[in-house]
Structure formats: structure tokens, C-alpha cells
Amino acid sequence: QVQLQESGPGLVKPSQTLSLTCTVSGGSISSGSYYWSWIRQPAGKGLEWIGLIYTSGSTKYNPSLKSRVTISVDTSKNQFSLKLSSVTAADTAVYYCAREVLYGDYLNWFDPWGQGTLVTVSS
Amino acid sequence: SSELTQDPAVSVALGQTVRITCQRDSLRSYYASWYQQKPGQAPVLVIYNKNNRPSGIPDRFSGSSSGNTASLTITGAQAEDEADYYCNSRDSSGNRFFGGGTKLTVL
Image 1 (tube, chains in turn purple, green):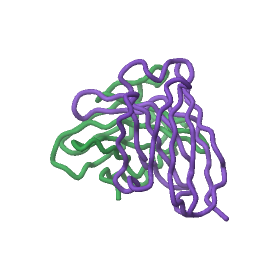
Image 2: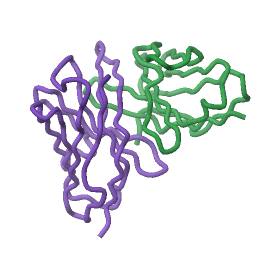
Image 3: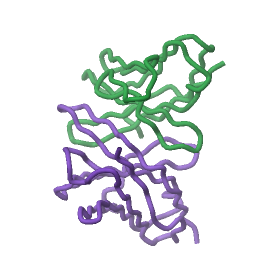
């Protein structure tokens, strides 16, 4: 059974770059037709999709964050990573990684999810 | 702003049926995937691919769609169903969206 685990600093200073890694266990990140996504959730608020990567390296980002986001994959380590630059307090959130399945032209779902990691932006 | 609109809060009496809706700002018919999130926990997929349940999700959870509104129905709500529920979809450009979430209270 595939499991995902986020890791990275829990505290980032304003204007710096947030960096997180998601480690996939129980299966190869390269197997199957899956996409690998980052999703975040500020305290008390809803979910926001950040972006995704396919194991070919192709990416898709939320237009509202696109200028600051980079997602990469390291298939040798079975990991994918998120970098979010020029962070502000508004980027404080729990960050989740998740595996996505696409079906047909418009169906998609995220399963499983990592447990999430809280990143606080503060000086 | 979200392109998927959910009611912020819904309540249901124990054992009764509740429908949580997710309206898309498009006339196109669509289906959503649905997630349950309990406090302090990661979201869990409860409905995918129109009306399929992952292993371990009770059959009281079902999904449907009519026009531009997708729905999650819980038939015979239990106390453990009290949680936040989120819908998700994607558009023709490949962008993914989540609804704002619905807080379900079981009375």
C-alpha cells in the first residue's frame, strides 16, 4: 500500500524559499499513470491545490502561485519536492502531498495523502 | 476564489440522510471527487470516479451529479461522519479546484 510522507523545515523566514519533500513508500513513484501533487491548507481554511508533477517531469501549477512554485521529482529516491519562493505570512499552512489519478477528460481524485506538515512563515 | 461552491455548514439528525452539494460555475455536467477531513487529520477520499467508494468507506456514502451540481449523500448519518467535506474537480485547462468545504454536524 502506497504511503506518502512530507518532510522539511517547519519555520521559514519571510522572503525566503519554502522547501518540502514528499517520500513515497510501498510503491515506485514511476509506476502507473499517476500524478503527484502538493496541496495546502491554512489554519481553519479550505484546501488549495498548488501544483503537480508527472514522472516524465512535466508540471502543472496553480495559476495564482505559478510565478513562485517549482515542483521537481527524483525517481531514484522515490521523492518529489516543492519549492515556494518569496514566502509571506499568507503562505503559512499545512502542506500535503498526494497521489492523483486521472480518468477520462475531466475525472480526477487524490489518494492517498500524506499526513501533512505545518510550515510557519515568521521572522 | 474557488470555482466550486459548497454550503459552509450542514447539519443532520443521527440516522437521517444528508446531501452535501458542490456547484461548479459552468453549465457543463461534471462529477467531483469527495474528501472527508476530521480535525487534525489529512483528508481522506470517500467518493471517486462518479460514484465509487475506496476500500473501507461505508456504503452509506454515495455520489451523484445533476447539471453543474455534484452531490455527496450520506444515507443514515452516523456520529463518526461529523467532519469537513471537500469536493474536487479539474477543468479543461488541467487546473484542479477544491470547494470551500462543508462542515457537517450530526445532531
